[in-house]
Image (tube, rainbow, N blue to C red; front, side, top):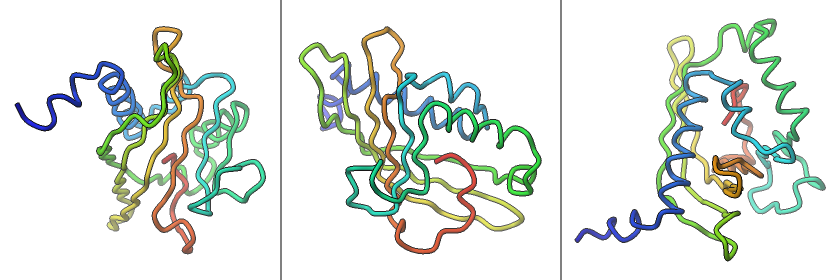
Length: 167
């Protein structure tokens, strides 16, 4: 038996992995409406600047989107009015190193942690983005829903260019 087999035998972890891979595929295909459907109404999409931040409402973030802000972000991305949108980068995401960090007794709400590498290609230039991801998932309604997604870019305190797409 390989070291990976016991981990994959955990149904909650497997379910979280499949869901997060599905989210990555939707974003790479630029299916932003499909991405919106993955969220709980009270969910937050967060890309903090401070890698140690925990109180996202009280700190500066690249993104701190509730439902209304996620919908506005997607509208802007689909409208095509902005040069960064009409000439949007093509992306390929790889998500790995999955762990379940926290789960309640009924496995209805879990926190899944993973690592993500995004390669964005635009105008002959490939740009690499690496991040630690934290997905808080509500599993109580059958289909998982994102309660919170935190994208901690490894270079978040540096000057970042070209992050006009969803991470």
